[in-house]
Structures are given as C-alpha cells and as structure tokens.
Image 1 (cartoon, rainbow, N blue to C red):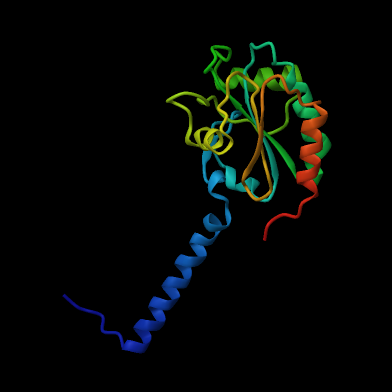
Image 2 (cartoon, helix red, strand yellow; image 1 turned 135 degrees about the vertical axis):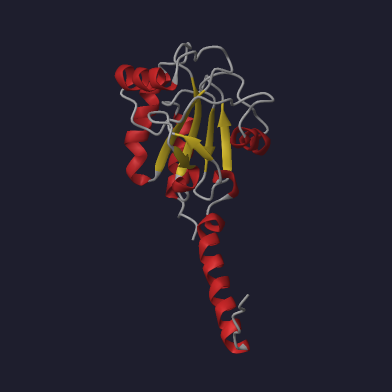
Amino acid sequence: MKFLHLSLPFAAAAMTALGAASVQAAEPAASCPALLQHSFPRLQDEKPQSLCQYSGKVLLVVNTASYCGFTGQYEGLEQLHARYRDRGLVVLGFPSNDFAQETGSNQQIAEFCSNTYGVKFPMFAKSSVAGAQASPFFRQLAEATGQKPRWNFYKYLIGRDGKPVASYSSMTGPDSQALRREIERLLALPAPR
C-alpha cells in the first residue's frame, strides 16, 4: 500500500481550499431563510422545487381545493399574482384534501386550475396542511402565526426576510383591501442582503 506524503504547508493549503469549497457549497442554504428550506413536488410534473428560489420575495401561501365554496378565489389569487409579480409578490398554491374537497390526482388538479381559472402562479402537488400529517412547512407557519388552516383557502403572508407576517382566514378574499395594503407595505420594504 502506498501513502501519499504531503508536506505540511501543502496539506494546510489543500485543507483550506477544501474548507472554502465546503463553505461556498453551504452558502446558498445559509442565505435561504429557515422557513423556506423545504422542497415540494411541482403540481404539473411532480419535479421537486425548493422554496429557497423565492428568497427575497413576498409570499402569499394558500392551501387550495377544487370543490370548495371558496374555489372561486383562484381567479382573484391569479389576478393578485399578476398585478404584483413584477414588484416581488409570489402566490404559492398548496392543494390539500385535508377538508375532503380535493379528491383528484395532481394532473387533474393542474388541468382544473389552468382550464377553469387560468392559474399561472406556482402550484405544488397535493399535500397535507393541517393535523398530525401536516407538512413541516405548514407546521412552521402555524407555529409562527398561532393559526393553523381551519379550512381551504387559508392564507399566510411571508415577508421578504422569510418570516411570516400574518395569516388570513378563508373568508378573506384576494380582493380584500386589508390584505392588499399589507402586501403593498411588504413590497415597499427592501429585500434583505
């Protein structure tokens, strides 16, 4: 067995370079707020998507369902997303059958959202948002705001710093003046560096 013999200065330089590479590799995760360090399959093709891609944006997170009295909010959510997208708002939809009103497959949900309401904002595969089976992301949102989704179309507003700012019941529609004022206030704040 042959051993590679390195001089001490060369070994130290190699270790420093390796350490720097490790720090650079860890940097993107470190710059992503803890709340956004989750991945979900995209609704349309189930390819994993990291929420870290939305760092520095204002996020409106909504649990959705296709067969609910609030399903019409899809239209307003898409309008809200289109109106403020260029200023940094992203609406994120999370279909859930926790309230027995989202029984379709991911493909059926994607077709329904696109064909019926023209939804273009990011949507993720069906997941659990409430109860013991809730995803860690929704558990964190509930813990941070003190409110868990009580029904479909519950909304969480997250600031550019990745921290939850407010939660809104299903009764608060996308056209709510209070919701829009808070979105505009958050959009006016600079992105963290």
